[in-house]
Image (cartoon, rainbow, N blue to C red; front, side):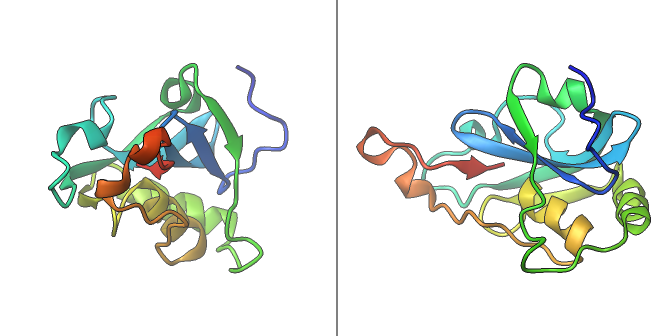
Length: 146
């Protein structure tokens, strides 16, 4: 994969993982900072349906290609029409300062999309609020952001 020439440090990267989307912050030189678990197992599979889907997460800096793998992805600065982004230098500085931090993961209250939007806009927000009881209902899975 080539780094898209229109990528800019501070852009949000949305990665389609099938049943859920993963989010990262592009920081330049082919690197991203993202929030998740250390292994690549979908965090949803770790929790029973009755769980509130919380756990331990970590902020990681990795190569975009390593995070994306063979999945589809795009630049998606989802709140730019609603919120003014912080300056790219500040986004990168803030994201990099969180690398290695252990944070509580909560599917409803703070997941990778919350982390990414917090870095870009200064407030944690997610477009997707998905009750765990509705995953896969009627054979149509909700798209989750993990």
